[in-house]
Amino acid sequence: MSTGKSTLVRVAERAGVSIASVSRVLNGLPASESITERVRAAAEELGYVPNATARSLKVGRTEQIALAVADVGNPVYVSMMHAVNEVVASAGFRLVLSSTGSDPADQINLLKNLNRGFADGLILSPLRVTPDLIEEVRASRLPLVIIGSLPEGVAVDNVRANSRKGVGLAVKHLYEQGRRHIAFLNGPLDTVPGTARLAGYLKAMTNLALPVTSDLQVEATDFTYHAGLAATTALLNQSSPDAIVCSNDLLAVAAMKIIVGRGLRVPQDIALVGMDNTDITELANPALTSVDLGSARRARKAAKLLLARIDDPDRPVQSVVVSPTLVVRESSVVAG
Image (cartoon, rainbow, N blue to C red):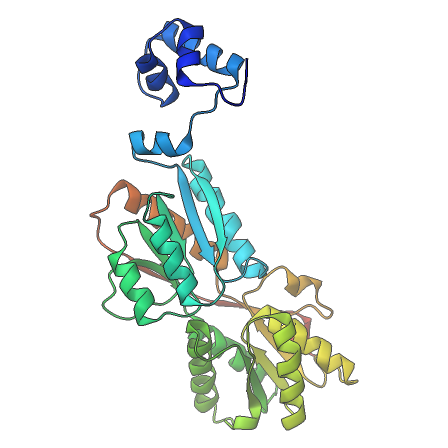
């Protein structure tokens, strides 16, 4: 008898019960102990696997939570994925990961597809927040939590980092190390983190009466290592900073490679600070000072908010801000 194509009818015949009884047992609904044992034994013998789509229609749950991020290769998103999975798995859900890139159109398409019943909820971390994306978020019937900032008036649960304050911590730290020509290596300015982190840099520099000049600012085409290589080259071709604040750790590691490749020393000639405090900070040589934006904490909180929203769709909307901390390592402090 075929194991891969066994049906409810075959399971019912093997167990000697009705099809309705088989359906109840396999969908986790109450049934007598005797019937439950017979159905499960028959299903195991026949290799019967319930159709997940059909089951979700009956019980109203897919038991799946979706997490959508821009780049699954970025260590900060890997950290978020593990944190979300810990929370949702303990609640009996599977985590489905989607790498949407930075184009809001891809996130909009994902939202539309998930609203057809492919998941019980979504945690979305968009790099770019456009009016079209906001419209789709507002129209979504799917329980949803955003990791990141949202425009005022958007009534959706969200968890965000205070990255402006985080950049301020980095600039202040470098100032206290005697650095006065502090450059800023940013990602794209049309992204949520790019805008917020530039604002934090400009405010901190102004507060410390440090020079804010265009030659000390450079915009990478993306928040990636390879984009960081080109951006750092451009920065060092146009200025001579004694320190660089980078908008994430990948950009900082790229900056370190270019700096060292030019025969300069980190931190003696140019001090470096990254952001996100990912695992690569300890792999860098010297180890990288970084602003911890609480990626795992944000992800855990987002997952808990989503589970609460699934359980109670009418609960009040929550907006949570996670405070940053600075983790000082060798890349920004000259020893002795």
